[in-house]
Length: 211
Image 1 (cartoon, rainbow, N blue to C red):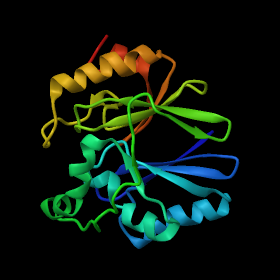
Image 2: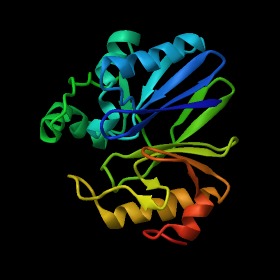
Image 3: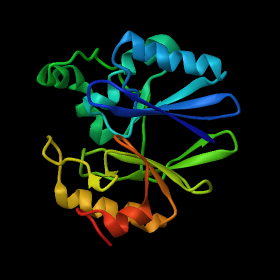
C-alpha cells in the first residue's frame, strides 16, 4: 500500500490517496476549487489509480470540501462514523460560518464502525474510534506497514482543537492515550494538517499529551 498526500484549501488540510494494485482509497478530500480538483485528478490519471472508496476521518468542513466533486467525478459516496453524520449534513452551514463555499456533500454510502477492516490489495486498514476533536472521529491503521492516517487527533507536537461543537478535551486525551499510543513508538502518523510524526516522538515530546 502506498500513500500520496495533497495539501488543499484555505485550512491547509491534508488529503490522502492510499493505493495498491491500481486501486485507491480517497481519505478526507479537501480539494476546494478547480485547480485543486485537477491536481488530484491529474495525479490519479498519471499513476493509473482508480478510486474505489471515499473515507472520512471526520466531517469538519476542511475535510469534506471535495466530497461533492468526488461523487460527481468518480461516483463515490462518503463513508464515515454515524456520530459524525450531523456534522456532514451541516457542511454547507459550516462553510458560511467560515466564509468559504462548500457544496453540500452527498449522503453516505455506509457507516464506519470501530474495529472494521477495510481491504486494499493485499493490505488492509483497521478502523479506530477516536472521538474528542469530533464526535464521530475515526482513524485508519495499517498494522503491517505500521502507519496511521490520524485525521485531526494528534499532530506534530500538538493535538486537534476541542472548542468546536462536539469537541471534548478529556475525551481527546483518552483517545490518544488509549488508542494511538499503544500502537507502538515506530508507527508513523499521517496527520490531517502539517507534517508526519511518530507515536514515539509524540509520546515523549507532545506538550498536550505525554506518556
